[in-house]
Length: 233
Image 1: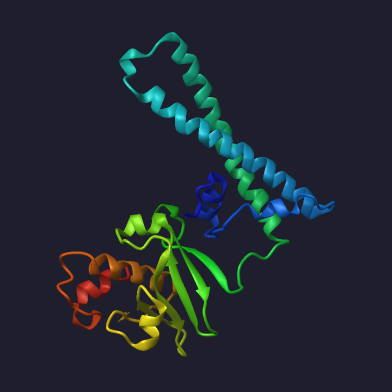
Image 2: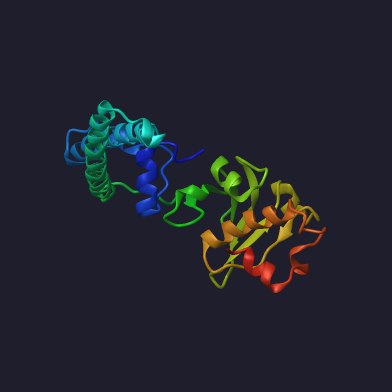
């Protein structure tokens, strides 16, 4: 599952860039400006994660049964408010340091990329696209995405995506690449989409429908217009 690191999750929410790890760590030993930025970013990420962990544990304790609060808890509340303020400052510094470091490092491109299924919202998970040929990408949903969409395919293939000659994206839902390549009835060609993220989302929406009572053994061609629109939701 991606984005279990609080700093990486905050960065993804603000920039839509999904990193599999704190990649800046590999620059922290460099004795140059990039190394300085990487060390600042690493230090800030650690502090941001620490305040997030503290607040995740402190807030439930102070909001549970307020009638039982003691004088000591008032001090805890004061400390928590200070931590919240520090957390907001760290979030700003984290993003500024990240963007400064990113100006010197390319993290996109290549044969694998990770996308938020809803831009700016990590809560719906991440889909990983792995290039299988110059035209095709294999799409795999992480655990958070599978849970958010209610499909039983965590960390497994959910389909193939290809870019069409007119710049749209062709999505084929399948649980095995061989099914799509052989034209098996266990693969499902979905409507083309204007952008890559929507095409990825339509794969999961299809499997969500496929595993519901509303499926009724239909193919995508047999869905009504409203259902087809919902595939892109």
